[in-house]
Structure formats: structure tokens, C-alpha cells
Image (cartoon, rainbow over all chains, first blue to last red; front, top):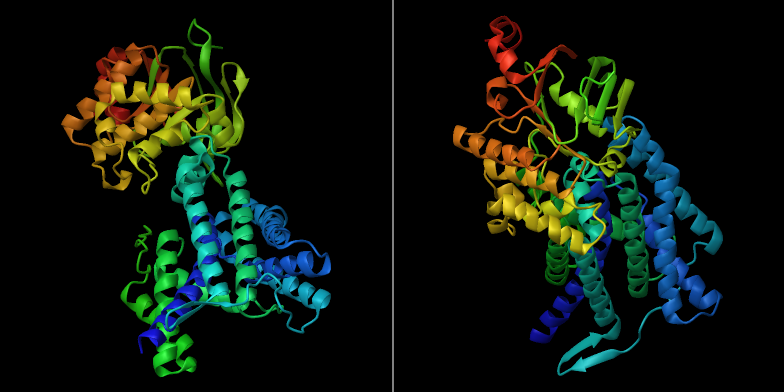
Length: 295
Length: 241
């Protein structure tokens, strides 16, 4: 019994790590720009395919595949800012949130279909995956799960250091907390927005490699993690980064145990149930702060 | 034409600005010379805060010109900050989830290096010792007076050519107001160039070199504080007695 529970725990932690990575990118952009990036799923998919192309088609070593995922994800984020977001920000600020959401839905569909046209719809194996199992007594730990958890822990540490200890990170947090005040301090907020989307794209690229290493590469690869990440963001409170990570692990563990206890088909409905309950009980999320708008 | 003998640090000429279709400032002109403390007084809702926001670039300039040390200011607030304008806005506008130290460090965002940042930090802590005690406290947990001190400290960390302070007494207890004005007085004595916005002229009577009375987006009277306080008809008409 204990070994089964441990296996469920490991599966839950691995899924939680993947959700956390997907959520961080989404939450970072929402928190600092008030922008729900609906193209995040396609950026994640792009990262997975970039790693595939670098290692399988071009025959480059694994680390180059990983670097390609980061590079293409970051480039997608940068281009998204330069071509779309920058121009939407010049218009009425009041309509930015809805306009950018609609625009990124279109970008996401276009990117996913470009991938479909380039690689076809047939699922492909992600070459950046590790086979084998680590046996610890009665417990079997797949190496891939260990790699995912380690990569996510390292990524979280890097992002936490970047946001907490660097001048760039402080500028990102300052812009998120008070855009006008940040500008008064000399922070060029448009450059901060560009940096945030590049960073979010790079994280999405890595997430794409990790997700496809557990499943397979396919054009709609990012849609499921994106949907789950959105659920985590809403439960945590949109834009709350540490809360989003906590929600990702908490909900992934809940999902894993419900799937084990009640059957796989009850996993996703249980997440939706949690979201509805949280929205009724705490509309601004478990870790979010209530915003009062004066009329 | 300049209304003072020394070359101005800040110069406003026929400044017109506002929000979309609403024009708030209707041709404001005055200068602030190095080391001066100039105060703009006036009733609520007549453009005092808009004036400071226009200088710092938060509200677009629709007409006239603003210059710092003879150089015209730019339209983006971060570029205006780089010219040496340090704006301490009304309502603090701190970064609520950052510590006091991080808020102060944001003030030194454009500072050239760590040594310079440390020097400015020492200066601010010497002037506002309470901030040193509170350095690791999250800004949102501070009292109103402490938040105002952080706002002023953050403005000082910018080490700008001119400090714009918007209604520092707003919403504070009399004892705290006295402390805040004590700090402003010390800054003025140390030679800082300050443009202060205040509703109550009596509060700045001993401090300001000159007062400008702003009414309905225009300067209607300028002179020494004592002269305004002696003009009962002006006080009654524009400031409600």
C-alpha cells in the first residue's frame, strides 16, 4: 500500500512541477502587465518542437536542444511584444486587457497551425527524455520524473533569484505593483514588458520540452498544460507567483490522489470543482488580494 | 522672462495640460532656481497635482514648454526622471509588497553603481533614521506617516536636480505633519531645490521662498508667503479664509 501511495505522490509531484512551470510563465505576464497571454500554450509547443528539430533533424547534442527550446520560446515572447503588445499598449489602456486576450488567441491559433503544417499532426517522440527507473526498495522512480522535478526546482530558484535579487527583477516587480511609480523612478516600463514576455517565453519553451518528454510532441501539446495553468492561476489569485506555484503542486497532488482513488476520469472535474468553490468562497483567489475600485 | 535672478533649475512657460478633452492647466509659467523652495498653493481640484504630474511626464504636455537646466523635458516619465526630476507623489505610491529597503533602492534605479547607492542610502538613513529601523518591513504594513517618510526617502534616493513633493501633509495627524515638515525644512536648509504643493499656505509660511497661488489651472498671484497671509481677501476668495 505504501509503495502505491508513494508512486501516486511522485506522479503528483511531477505533474505539479510541470503545472508550476506552465503557471509561472502565465502568472508572471498577468502579474506584471495585466495581460492574459492566450498564446502561451503555442509558445510551450514551439519550445518542444524546437528541441526536437535541434536534436533529431540537425543532430545537435541534448544541451543544444534544450538551448533551442529556450531561444525559440524567448524569441516568440519578444516578437509577441514587438509586433502585437507594444501596439496595443499605445491604444486605450482601458481596453488593453480584452484586446490583448483576443489578439493572443489569434496568435496562438496561427502558431499552432504553422507547427501543424510544418511537422504534421502525427505525434512525435521527444528525444530529450531519459529512460530507466531508479529502484529504491519497493519504490520505482522513473529517471524522467526525477529530471523534471530537478529542472523545475532549478528553474524556480533561478526565477526567484532573478526577481528578488537583481535590478531587472526589482524593476519587473515594481512595474507590477505600481506602473506609474516605477516610471517616476526612471524604469522604462516598455522595456520591462519586453523582458517579461521574453522570460515567460523562455520558461514556456523549457516547459514544452518537459511536458513532451512525459507525453509526445503534437501541435496541441500546450493546450492541456495551459488550461491547467489557468486553473492554478485563478485558484492562487491571478498574478501571484509564489501562490501559483503552491497551487500548482497542491492541485496536482489532489488530482493524482483523486485519480488513484476514484478513477482517472474524475481528476479534471475535481480541479474544476475546486476552481468553482474558490471563486465563490474567495473571488480573488486563495493568495490574491481583494481589489476595490472606486466608482 | 524669468521672475528670479539666478538661472532656473526648473522653468515652466505657458504650460497647458490635462486629461483627454479636459484642460486642467491653462498656461502656467514660473521658474524655480537652485536651492529654492517654491510652493504652489490653491484649492482642491484646481490643478496642483496635475502640475507636478505634467512636470514629471505622467500627464502629457499639450502646450507650452518645461525645461530642466535649460534642456526641454521629454514626454516619457522615465526620461524626465533621468533628467533629474524626483517626484514624491500624492498618496505615496509606494511598491506595497516590497520592503522599505527595496522601495528606497528603486529610488536609486538610475544610480551609477553600488558605492553611490550605499552613499545615498546612508544619507537617507541619517535624515530619516526610522527608515533604517524599518528597512526589512513590507511597505504595506507601515503607518501613514512612515509611508510618507519612505516616499520622501525614495525621492531623495533619486538624487535629482529638483524634488517635487505633492501635499506631504495630506491625511496625516498634526504631530506627523510637523515631523514631515521638519524633514522638508532640513532638506531646504541643506540646499535642495524643492517644488512643494500644499493646500494650506500657513503651513509653509516659514519655509517657502516664494508662493504661487494656483486657481482654475492658472497662477493668479505670486509672492512671498507673508504677503499672501496678509491678504485676507485673497485667502478668503481662493482658500476659504
